[in-house]
Image 1 (cartoon, rainbow, N blue to C red):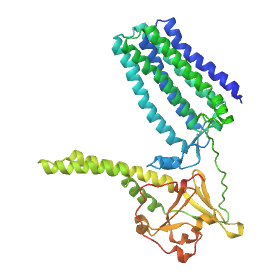
Image 2 (tube, one colour):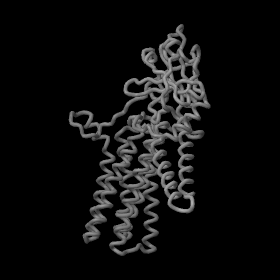
Image 3 (tube, rainbow, N blue to C red):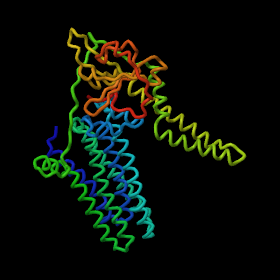
Image 4 (cartoon, rainbow, N blue to C red):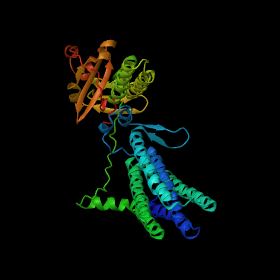
Length: 428
């Protein structure tokens, strides 16, 4: 295992090698400004992909609030704890890492396209220069070199075991910081060219800003340590929460599971009640009806689009609800072995959360539309700013909430929830 200083020196060596590629291209191979910016642009994409791979295998607890991802599918992923092991490699994918990775890739891809359009395309159009065949070949080799350098950095991260102690936000944040620095160099350099600045000045500016951004990324851990030691908050100190240890056993426990058919139907309702589904499907249906009323034909395309939207969100809702609840079981230990805790256990991913007897006593019982259809009930309780939901349980699960059966029979009609919270997937 490498020490922090050794890891930092290794990273500096890799970054210096990566930055030497375009410098050699400019000085020895007579690259144009467009060629240099093209290599940097490709490196930005490689940096983003490498950070996504690092975050995919990071085993630290995510630092974001899961309630912020309580959207369709994203919420189901972010609120689950547990890992999926790869069949060959000694690595595993933490399910809760996926939402942050997908969001970063979405935002980073937009920025990457923007930097390429302005920084590379704008400069090429302004200068009216195109790369020669020899320059194209050397730039291709430069692209291979910078991509290889980023791959080495990812391999060192995995082989060195760094992934075992970092949250997924750490590599993603570093990649976005690097993209912001290099992207700014591309944008500002392109602006200088459009304004008529001499190419040697723009080349020197881009190289300097790019190198400075990489150095800041390497020594970020030093800034984090300084931030932690002082009362001055620079925003570099990392927030590294730890997973709560949850122990659970089937032996001597009362086990209750949601009704599978009710979970699937609840997913259909969940998908169709999504705000985005209502907006898109309603708009297409409205325009289709208006077109039908004002023309001789029927707006088959618009009405068909509404059906496609409804079908897509139905599928997403079924996946969302099934991933949240279909593999869940709720374990309550018997009184003889200290039955004070209620544990939500995912049969695929392991224990998810636990609630004390006091929390169980505060559970509210409700019958949603799906519950009335299948003769089930839904339990929910809010603790520490989070709502835990146990949906579609059989009526004989009255004792799971810590209340008497007479109280458990008092139901009230509520509508199906449109925005689930940390339900049975809360991470404790």
